[in-house]
Length: 56
Image (cartoon, rainbow, N blue to C red; front, side, top):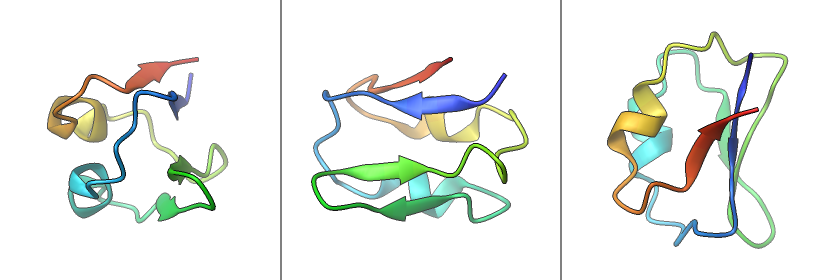
């Protein structure tokens, strides 16, 4: 089950720097997770200061 970034994202980039496989990129409005690359480790969710990352 991949993670997703909700509208609570403030585009701080903390999640992207913690992703071990580089599955998180800056999108138009906020960061986005490539579900095909996500390995479900949860590192991004633990790094998010706003709790904007949840499991789908």
